[in-house]
Amino acid sequence: MTGTPTKIVCIEDDPKTVELVKLILKKEGYDVTGVNNGHDGLKVVDEVKPNLVLLDLMMPDIDGWEVYQSMRAAESTKDIPVIVLTAKAQSIDRVLGLHIAKVNDYITKPFSPSELIQAVRRVLGEPRRESSGG
Image (cartoon, rainbow, N blue to C red; front, side):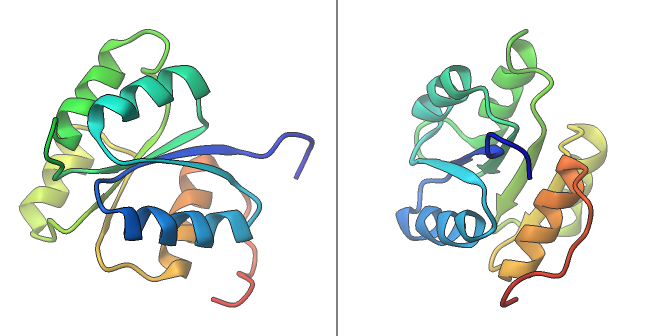
């Protein structure tokens, strides 16, 4: 990895999931910021200009799709890749996310650490390497 670490913002209303994501990805050398709702998520994404956003779909204030649409509508955030992290595991939701909304990846909860790391690396275009611990 060169100089500055890759910045990731995790927008997720469950604090335990945010902590888990931070734990997994910080161990891999990523700089992770966690946010617990959509409104704050949009603010932080605009301020931080992350390399990647991990986005929950079901949140109480504004849902993940609204956050995603707002990001795509704004010039400053429209090109930031998004991985959806959700409990919505039905195949129709996955199809809507990947093929209609064009999110970069779609991970269903519960997920394994290696599944998350592989998706992040794939979306960021990083070379695949053996995970430490797994």
